[in-house]
Image 1 (spheres, rainbow, N blue to C red):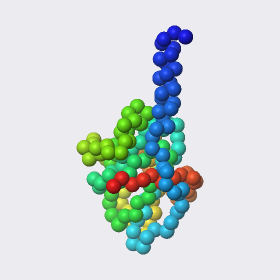
Image 2 (image 1 turned 120 degrees about the horizontal axis):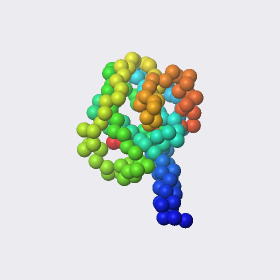
Image 3 (image 1 turned 90 degrees about the vertical axis):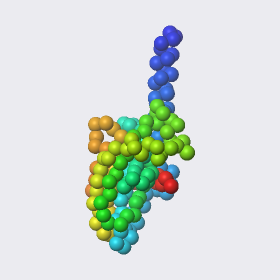
Image 4 (image 1 turned 180 degrees about the horizontal axis):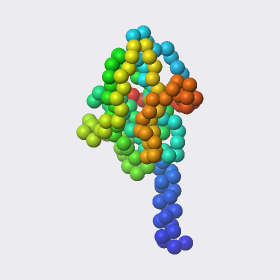
Amino acid sequence: MPKLSRVVYVFVIFIIVGCGYAPKGKGPVFQLNPTQDGMSTLHHYRITSSCGGGAAFTLISNDEVVTIIGNGGYYTQHLNPGTYEYKTIFQSHAINLPLIMIGQAIDNSKAKAKPVYTITTESNETYFLRWNACFAKKIVEVVPEEIAFKELKGLKAFEPIK
């Protein structure tokens, strides 16, 4: 086998295997709980997809780092009603695996965060935000409850970043 062919095979295998390194939800499987009285509930989720599968977002809400949204999982926020700006730091874990390591300097990278979505929430309301890493799709979109329930089935929780 020529050297170039070997290099191409190794590169293809690295890309295929690397796509699996984006963080996945590891917490409890999604279950809808009632919204706390007077609060708003936001369910952030990302369905499992090969498109952008090796990528993840560090999710920042009103300049506070919240979680990492990887390929397949959800994160629930209980918030006071109000306006929230979401920013993200896009990370490709297929190419740059050390970005997800514990101890990364997220505070240093906040300056790179891109504002992607602003939502105003109401008291006692629940919202479903689907995150996408595919370049042809919107990064985030509000999804109707009936669609979100189907997409959230079986997804596990992402851990908060504290």
